[in-house]
Amino acid sequence: MAVFAGQGDPRRSMELLWRGASGPAPRPGAPGPKPALSVDAVVDAAIEVADEVGTAALSMRLVGERLGRTAMALYTYVRGKAELVDLMYDKVLGELPASFPQAGWRDALGAWAEATRDFHLRHPWVSQVSQARPVLGPNEYRAYNALAGVLRRAGLRPDEARAIVPVLVRYVEGAVRAVNEARQAARTTGVPDAEWWNARASALEEIAPDFLDGVPDMAWLESRDGPPPEHDGPYLEMLVDEGFHEGLAVILDGVEARLTARLGARGPDAPR
Image (cartoon, rainbow, N blue to C red):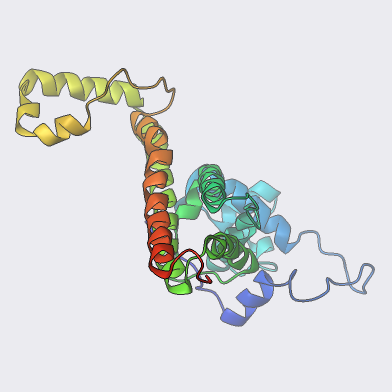
């Protein structure tokens, strides 16, 4: 289920998101009582809760319990869950590298994909935050700037880079979403992944032993030269891990073909 960001008061949200990037912090020792909590403490606690239960179950009450406070005590710092999700989302994006300085653009995009995949596996709830309404925080801009920098360095035109960004982002997010859902399935249903597959595969083979005859291309797709790789996680996670780099290589081959064709059309000595 998608979570739509940007539902709080626009000006207040921007002030909170950009408070550390758009001006000096309050002076130490400034007059007035020192708050027992802070916006950052509330956001950090909310991230911990969301990592455990997701955004659907996230509530001000659960965040308050994590901090040893009531939900009402948090409203001084964050006005509600909608505002909190914006801050959480932009805060965790700060974990991503600000640049990918690898010498070749393919290596740099490979490093970007790895970092982005690991990030989404650490914070499964991030994929639920829809990009239909971006947060527009500093770390969100910084993360996209890092990817744009690699594409620019590769030699793509702006229109080409804009076209490839969603392909790359959706590829990585789609792979991660499949893994996270496979992990969640066992926790939610209480049935281990291997047990589920074994029970249904046995029933299918007993009831329709020749079912693959009707789907020969699917049988071809699932064929292997040897046994599948050893994997401790769910079956779907094994499939995603097995094909992640190969699928990314196919996408990057397309980018490289575009660049090569352009260079050939202009001649090797033409300026880029």
